[in-house]
Image 1 (cartoon, rainbow, N blue to C red):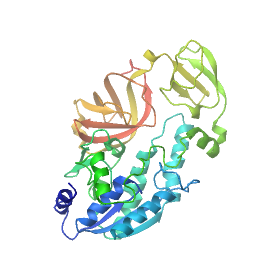
Image 2: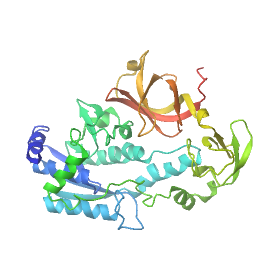
Image 3: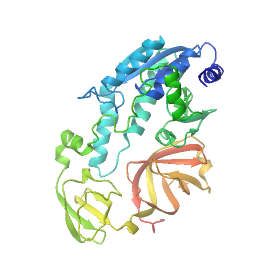
Length: 368
């Protein structure tokens, strides 16, 4: 399988291509870089220093001290160039600060989407142009065909949702060699290549919060946003108190400790510092408004046409309509726990049509 895939890659790019590979230190990007190099292309591995990890030995992170060392070891083992770019300040401004600001505003952030949007396919792409690279490739599980994006073959690992803010201009230089294979095959190739990361764990947590304690992180970054307030039902009955809205997300059930439950978080009212909860049947909404619209097809594509809409990374898309000029999305039927701040991605079957950020959610009877 390894040799067959290398032969396939040889036909994927012009013979003398200079290819930059974004290397996070994980299995996927390491295999990608190794395959590109073994296919005979000039290969430059780039690893980004994005934050300072307090525990460099943690093995479920991304772009930490240990990950940088792993990427270096792969490049040394395979004998291609490798560089480290310090993007800590850029990452703080575009990802970490946005993460904290979004929670403070009563919404739920999408740090992986922001990192792709600004860091990997923004600043790093700019760097690639300065070294006259022909392509920037990554280990994302997503397929590119003639400057259009599609879900990867491995549906469980598909990462197209997190690339919904990637622009058509950025796509011209991007490519994703793992599009047609699945994770188990990548693991097998890593072992065949004898890479030092072949058995490395997946990065599961938010990369800059490796212990998974995002509330603790927010308290350290901005303790003033944790102000106690009332928990109220959706008919304004006071049920209890909370210790800060930033510790909750729409749809949350655990940790509420309220009588006569179960209750679910429905809304975070930052103006009055109230946490609104409801029963599960009241958690469904049908209409919302968006901003930061990024389309990979012409705007006219959405006119009078149903598309598949995905508002969470692991949600099964549901049919609805996107009214581009009004910046309004309407599902055919109500959907559970639509969160402000999350990506809304549009699909036609497996093709990614574009995306945006959810701004304001309206109740299921709102169609004005």
